[in-house]
Amino acid sequence: MIDENLSCKEIRIFAMSKDEPRFENKTYSYIQREFFLKDLVNEKGKFLYYRNGMNISGDTLVLFKFDRQIIASAIVKKSEKELEVKHGVEHKGALYIDISTIEVFKPISISKLLKEIPNLRYSTRVTNIPIENLDIIIQLINKNIDNKNY
Image (cartoon, rainbow, N blue to C red; front, side, top):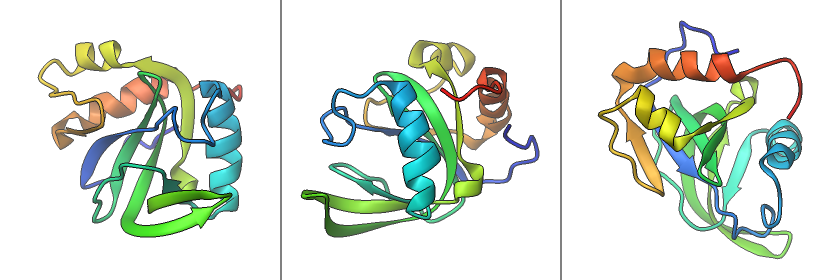
């Protein structure tokens, strides 16, 4: 569960590409379980991105979108543009996630998000959510968390 007293500077949506080799032909539940809850923890929160990243100065609540649904959230401390080859794939940069804040939950559709935040300007790649919507986001995520692993 996300603490209702969570403090962050920004809220952003980050689109994960199904074209990225490690996510190709994977289900959202596989990505939640294997990538967010295992791989990211083992990598100490370093999320290498394949194509497009985002500039983050710190303490940003990031909602991770996969296949038109929000499937996870976490606080990102910083981002860096750095070319790094891992498992034969060139990555353009990294997000540094506080692994203690990773949450996975029943997917939240973009249409549900737009219904809850009607004035949201949604983009398919990176979307900023006005910080005054933090309580709505926390409630929406916490309502979709249950005790089973996805």
